[in-house]
Each structure stands twice: as C-alpha cells, then as structure tokens.
Length: 437
Ligand code: FAD
View 1 (cartoon, helix red, strand yellow):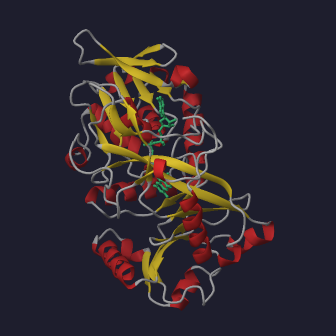
View 2 (cartoon, helix red, strand yellow):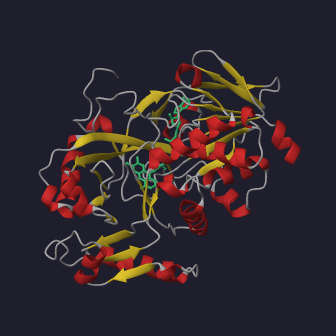
View 3 (cartoon, protein in one colour):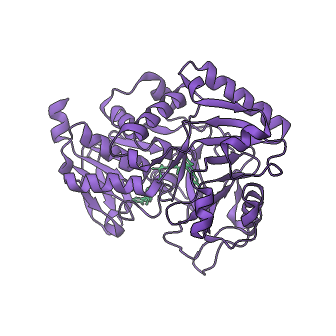
C-alpha cells in the first residue's frame, strides 16, 4: 500500500470546498505524493461558492446514528488538538433551547441519549432547567427574554471559523506541492474513460483541458447531482444567512457568548473579531428545479440546480427569509431587532433521503468516487471526513460507514429527514436582483 500511495494519482473535483479539501489533506498525511494530487474547483481554495465559505459554522456532537457520534467525537478531538485546525475552533459552548413544551421534551430526551451513549459526555453536557440556569450560560440575555426557556448546554460545542480553516488546508496543500486548477480549467465537464468505457481515467474541464489520474473523487457539494446522474439520491437546497455589524462596545458585550440554537427560530453566533454577528433562521431549505442533464442521464431531467452567491453576487434571499431571520433576531438579540442586515445570502448543500452522506464508488464507473450528500451538517467534519474518504478509496473503510454511505436510490431526498419538503425558489420572490437565468 505504501508504495502505491507514492505513485497513485488522484483528482479531486471540488477540492476547494469542505469534503474535497479534507480529502487532499488526508492523502498528503497518508503519504501520497502531493504533486500527484490535482485539485479542480471553479473557484480557488477556499472556494467562494463552497458551503464552507462562511464566517462560522456550529461545532456540536451529533447523535442520530452511531456513525454520527463516532465522526463528531473524532472531529471534536481534531478541532481541539490538531495544530492545523485548533486555531479555528472557538470553544465557547452551545445552548440548544426552547420554550415550547414538545421541543423541551425532545431536547431532554436528546440530553439523556448523550448521557446514555457512555462516551464521557456526562462531563460536558448539562440540562438547564430554569431561567437562572439559562442566564448563567448566556449572560447577555435578560430574565424577561428567557421566560419558560429550558435547554441543553454543551461544553463540546462552539463555532468554527469555516473559510479560514479551509484556507489553512489550502495553504498547507500548496506548500506541499499539490496541483491546483480553477476557473474554466478547474470546472468539471465530464469524466474520461478507458477503452472499456467503465474505468474512469480522468476528467475533462469546460475549457477542454484533460486531466488523467488513477482515482477521481467527485466532491462538488450541491453541484454534484448536476454533474453526475445520482438517480435522485441528492436534492440540492439553499439555506439563508444575514449579518449585523456591531460597534466595538456592542461586540464586547456579546464576546464569548455560546452559540444559541432554537429549532423554532434559528441560531446566532458571537461577533467575530470585526464585530460581525451572523444570524440564520431554521427551515427545510429552498430548491431551484430546472430541466438539466447531468452526465450519465439518458435525457434532461428535473433537478435542483444551485446558483451561487459567488457567481451571482447581487442575489440575496427571498422576502420570506427576511421575515423569519428578523424573528430570530427579535428572539435572541431584541436590542438589535431593527438593525440593518449586511451580507444577506443563500448557501447551497445537498440532502440525501436519510441525511447520511453518499460516499462510495460509482456503481457503474470504476475509480470514480462520490463524496457528497452532506445534508447540511458536514462542515464540522472538515478535519476528519477526508480520512474516511481515503479509506473508502483504499478499500479499508469500516463496514458500518460503508453501509451508511452506500449508493442507495429510492427515498425522498426532497423532504429528507426535515420537517417538510423544501419550497422552490421559483415561488419565493425577493432574492433575484439581476436578469440572468
Ligand atoms: P462544498 O463545501 O460546497 O464544496 C463543493 C465544491 O465544489 C465548491 O468548492 C464548489 O466551488 C465546487 N464545484 C462546484 N461545481 C464544480 C465544478 N463543475 N467543477 C469543479 N468544482 C466544482 N455544517 C455544520 O457542520 N455546522 C453548521 O453550523 C452548518 N451550518 C450551515 C449553514 C448554512 C447556511 C449552510 C448552507 C450550510 C451549513 N452547514 C453546516 C453545512 C456544511 O456547510 C456543508 O455540509 C458542507 O460545507 C458541504 O461540504 P461539501 O464539500 O459537500 O460541499
């Protein structure tokens, strides 16, 4: 294996994003020759259209499956201790809270499940059963504001300086000698095959350049189902975000505030070093269905096609999102409820029916590996997901992850495991401010 690692050539499509950059990192750490690794991405790393190109993302422990727990704990360990990632973890804690009886019951059950997981989480997770407890976790709240709130506070949580962390991988990879292509020369057009028509040998990009390799990793995030026919296993959706600029005095008052999440409203983060607070609402996402023919589909099909803020910088978000983000601000930050928003945008992910990743070799095309299906929760795995993608590539991935991440047509990726199916942007006015289709 060691000598194969030295000579194996790998192309990573979408290597400027989350799963792709993590894969490049772990190839290097495993002894692959950096100059044999080629990162193709429409935008230079950190790709400005990556879902990870953001001020911050939540770090928290996911418990939905055994695999989620394993991956979250691995990631937590690396965010805390790996010198490459440590500077980007702001371990301020996280409060997952509600004032609605049904949600409080669910949160309480979740808290119990964390304790019952026997993973030492009883030392870092606490049930806050009173308003005073909530106030001691989040001192910037007022007693009136938190009437009836209860919740779960975790010391394992906080926020990740997302784009900066991907940038750090990019700098490391460049330093090591990884090859990069962006623009038309980095934008995937189609896979290239050997004479047998089933063994993938490389990739052609939209400027006509051809790159050859032993393995091709397709990690193009929300764009993957538009590039390769995934048989409707992934439906790409946008979520929305807005920011508020604080004065230095205001920013000081919110410093070290934990991430606060309420499933009925959304979530917010403490201000960054420039005094900017990010606020998101919580909803099942927006699709953008079009007629489109991904490679491998016999004919054009109806598919949700992302439209990035990077390529359409005047896009914002639907009018309905302005209302729901304002509602979240009024809930969490009532003193800022009339403040203007800056940098209002949509960000694209791709859901699978069961919210598990889709990381597997294509069932028909040998050496073409899919690494996608992030389902809106995969940034936290930036430090470790690439390790498992490389294991899949080398045939050593543990069995339960193979089972969770296998090729599995069927199911409803439009609804996925969310509260409702996504609405389509065609029915949501207010987000489009240019004439381009
Ligand atoms: P991306 O990071 O989007 O990477 C895909 C890459 O493919 C991009 O760089 C893109 O430029 C490239 N690409 C596209 N088309 C082509 C092409 N034709 N050729 C070459 N390259 C191409 N996760 C968390 O863990 N915690 C959170 O708090 C969290 N919050 C979120 C909030 C919002 C608003 C959103 C939208 C997502 C959030 N997520 C969060 C989810 C997380 O961001 C994603 O799960 C993760 O970033 C997806 O990674 P990816 O590598 O699959 O895709």
